[in-house]
Length: 194
Image 1 (tube, rainbow, N blue to C red):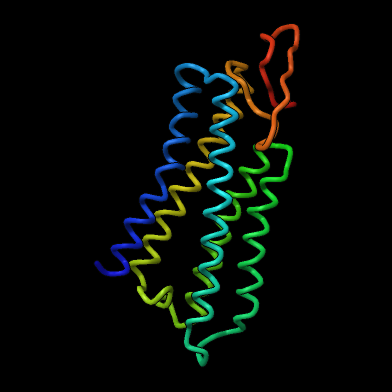
Image 2 (cartoon, rainbow, N blue to C red; image 1 turned 90 degrees about the vertical axis):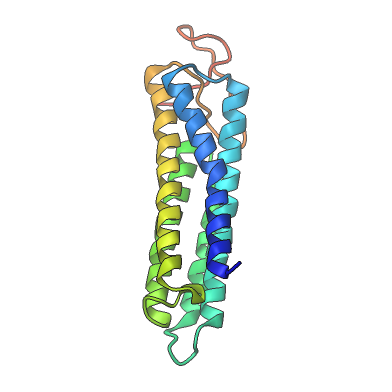
């Protein structure tokens, strides 16, 4: 099996947690709300998986810079710094007290990482330079990035929709939640401030 085939299989398999959790949120918004404990579990799972994958993909920039032809390389040190900034953004997204802010930070991280990879490809050896497999890899990365961003948007819109309709619990934090019992809501329901 060649490298690109393996990359495709792993890349599409890596989408499974994103798509599955996004679909759970969508079904929950449209059909029946999830219990608070399940919502907390799914949001935490989505955020932690997303942060790990963003950090992993950011580390791929190191390999691209370090294995590129040094004569064609623009300042590679800046790419290494950028890679670390993405990893730190992923980590910081786990420390915020607001799930929607975490989602936004990760979503922007994926978009900016894709842009950084595209720019690196052009600088290092032209548009076919990423990881030695060229345009097919760029297409794969574009599709994967678009699906991941779409999943982040679905989860964010569902979370916001839960709050707007006040049909289901919404967590305040990806790492913990506070149960709020307002007179007009059932005890134990958690809503975003707004």
